[in-house]
Length: 286
Figure 1 (spheres, one colour):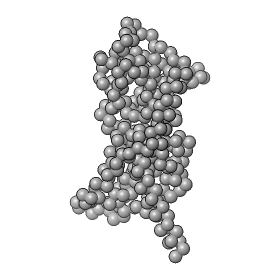
Figure 2 (figure 1 turned 180 degrees about the vertical axis):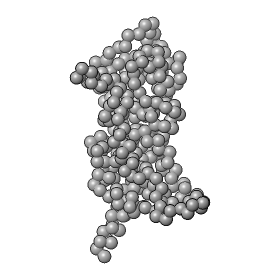
Figure 3 (figure 1 turned 45 degrees about the horizontal axis):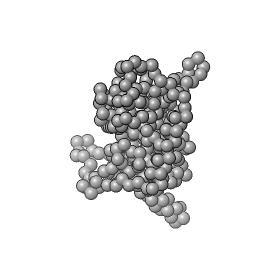
Figure 4 (figure 1 turned 135 degrees about the horizontal axis):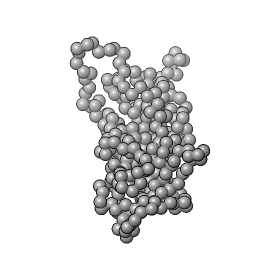
């Protein structure tokens, strides 16, 4: 099982991102939503990045301020967002589904860190700054376009591949307890894209670099003892923009809301790819 650890560099980087996020909001024009009977001494202020699609030929980006009585809603950020949408401003747009940290729908940028709104606790008496996932195409408000991300996931063939198909009526593919344990810390990924959208390499190369979320899932299938296409999978990841763009910064691990460790998974994957490339070179020279 991969143990979640943080490098000093990754923590410092995240700290800088948090400071930058709040400074950008503080330096932006914040528009207060008209509300009545607001008790600012006990309520919590939310600064939410809004984006309205083209209206009369112009796109509108701004920060909207809301005051919420968090004592009258659940303890998580998503509870407050639902309260805002239901009781204050029905135009606010965001994704949500399970409310249990399982579906990955409500991923967003919360107080300088990507996370799932449904499992991110509210901080009493502190301004909450919320925006969409970093450097992703925005559809509206907190909703981003995940098309490229899902296409990248599809590209790694995220299913068990066998050269010998199962005979109809035969039993399942058995796996030892030791081999099964290797998948712990990998299969729990909910594909929320929090890690990938906090990765600097993915920010600048997301059209060609798969990013930590997808590469971690690729690693999950490569080390699965039941899969018979290991070398084929490694060959697909041998390009310059597959795993080589991972510089082990570690922000992916630091921001993962499920507590997984993509950084170490990619470290192990890079070693497997390097080993495959050496074997492939020996085959060509033989």
